[in-house]
Image 1 (cartoon, one colour):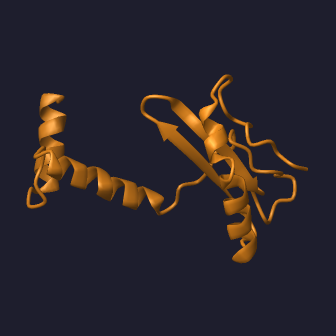
Image 2 (cartoon, one colour):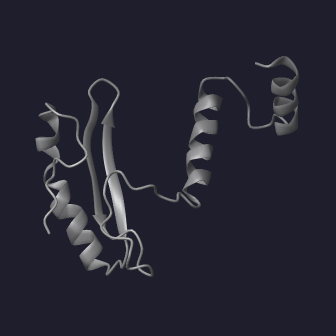
Length: 116
């Protein structure tokens, strides 16, 4: 079954049409590397909101009752959270909100005691 590119997108957003080729890119990648599961991809603009949102493949390779991956499916992030946390910390360092030499416990205790 072919899922339309517009699935998961807000009504009236024409911007997603510029990203329609992503369907082929993602599908080709999953096929080339023989990925048995699936992935979800979203493009979000701070000014225009969701530009593209689509699921590819299946939710589970072991549970056949879990079917096609859609934009509404919950995903386990696994070790991805480490990367996101690292980037967030480096953004705070760039903004001089903290330094890499600061003891983390001091930051946690300060937040807990002051409610900041």
